[in-house]
Amino acid sequence: MRTDNHQLEEEIFMSQPLLAVSMNPLDVRDPRVNGPQGDAIPFFHEGRYHLFYLEAPAGKYDQPDRGRTPWRHIVSDNLVDWHDLGIALPLGEGDDPDIDGIWTGSIIAVDGVLHVFYTGGRRSACIPQTVCHATSRDGVLFKKSPSNPIHFPRSEWFEQRDWRDPFVFWNEEHKQYWMLITARANHGPPGRRGVIALSTSDDLVSWTTVCEPFYAPGNTYSMECPEVFRLGGKWRLVFSRFTEYAATVYREAEDLAGPWRTPKYPALDGARWYAAKSLEDAQGRRIAFGWVHDRHGFVEGGEWLWGGDMCLPREIFVGDEDRLCVRPPREVDAQLTSQRPLPIRQASGATTEEWEASAAGTFSIAEIEIGALQRSLSRLTVEADLQDLAGGVGLALYSNTGLTEGLLLFFDASTGTISLGGPTEGEESDRLPVPWVTNQIAGRSRGKLRFDLYLRGDVLEIFVDRQVALTHRQYFERSFTAQVYVEDGVVTFRATLATRVN
Image: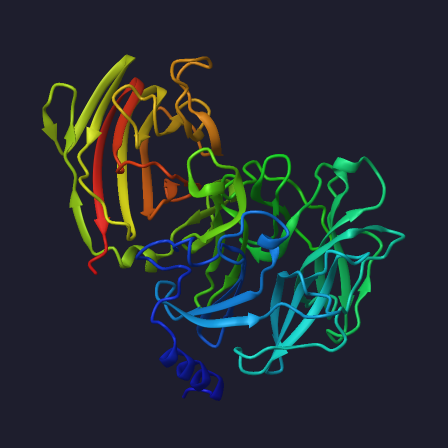
């Protein structure tokens, strides 16, 4: 039986477009019309996937205008078709603490009420970031607390400018609500003051800050959008760092009290999948949402900006060596119902669906004949059977015969490093891509290796062995092409294209 809340949502569905601008498998947004999206706040409630996210005004490149973000709310039954429920939390007015931004936060359901804790931005205030509170009984209409802001940083422990991204959860062991907050200690080397502060509450109204931070590694400027969850028998702390090596990363511990240790492979993606946060659905899956950046002017070489487009949802799971891995959920692949093998054209001109590249001690390359692609979601899968690989294998994307343009995706057999970047044009360091984003997987000279490239508009999401990911955005003014190559090895390649039938 549908609840009143569901009935209200259904009524709103009838008055909204079938597909939201965000998460649309047909294309990414038109930046001239729709503003950039950022910082997901996902929430699974009454059988539906709810995604709240920050939405900036269209046509704004620079702060503070680009940071004037309300929360937009979209909802889905299947992680594919998303319905737009409009602006959930609008910007404040006058003396409100959130006049310059409704920034990242979290949602928790207690006794039929949804409690939203978010960052209120007021840039001119002596404390420009504060924790604010809003509630809803129907999941659509939210009422801000008249007591906002409800929580401030303690000046004797923390700097006063950074106090944001509250993540609230119930701590069963302590029988308390805990709130994790992005903050900075007020002492120590300036570049190492980033901490995740901890506040506690018995009633979600009164909050007490703990002097000792929840996590204080002493090696970073700031840790944004934190969340904590239990997966694979351990607690996992996920956050994003926008300084040093930007990425969404995680730490792990046996207990919420820590210590929080750095795993062997701490990154869930590279620098272009940012501020990712997750939910647990009815199937017990951990589904994460992150965004890929725009570039200034929407051109190659433009400065990377805050905000862009939401990427495809991803399932976080525990893989080999107790590592947190990511893969597309099955619902994403299920919509790609048209699949066909692709011919591979060798340098000799011969074309086969299976290319055995015998390049021990040398280099060999061949072109995958893809044809024209639409802007809607498609997946290029390249499977490599490694018989004797000493160097590495790669894909040249949007490139030319001289490999001086486009992108190079390269797997190093000895180290397991996966790099995605621009070609070096023959300069040192030798042949490797100038890395824009990197990740790690187990190195190997024999066995299987699989690349899945999900293309949608100008966004590229790459999954290797359906375990690790690299995300990128390109603005090349040419069609998508792909060449496979091997350095010092014997490898057999196969390629498949999967597309939507609209």
